[in-house]
Image (tube, rainbow, N blue to C red; front, side, top):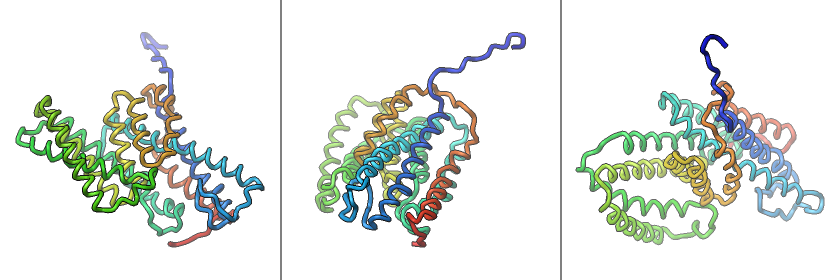
Length: 334
């Protein structure tokens, strides 16, 4: 120590780098399960699809049932990854000095990752949906717009009518959002006419509620509501049509965690609940609550930021090549 220099003690708890590493390991475990373990089962029974569907051609007396149990456990571990990446995205957004560069990196790696991602879903040029970087990119754009339009900018009272329009749209959007979930099979069978009726009823109900609430809100609060709701709907609908990973629920989970940023554990829990509405086994991500609770706000060990970006497409490609060498998959262009 020189002169009056004082060494700042390191805070107790978990750093951002530690959470990143845990998220990467969780993701790698999930993809290892898809490529290697489920790939092996498909060599025994080409009709094997995925977890939870008992294949008639598999002999469940030769250890296959135990393997299915292992697959189930590993997939549940894998569910920690996306909510942790959302948490890191929000932290990155709050602390970055250049949102444009941050968004550009996400967009660039969404492009780089798409071909390896396609291989995981059937073929090099087979398009099923966009990879997780695309979801994070859309979520980042959404929270950026909310931050700029609803939180930083002051709007004229002439825009108050948009408050009531947004209320109707929010009610209709909530119904549409609920019908996108995969946890309840019945929601996939609702006729279009019934969807429209439900959306109209929900829109009217939301309008009535927001009119009553609006009596206690000033112009600034009403405009903040408007310019929070509109980006959510716009980016949610865009994400649905371009088919990002986790769909509109992925973007919604990002927004929820951002809106409850001041209480990180609550924001994380509500974000996971949002994903659970989409796919029930996402509830396993609640296991990461202690990590969020112990987060100390520090960056932690310095690792080149591009390592975390490159890891995603690189590990998918490596696992694919291993599965290909083992004969658990075959190359397909489409």
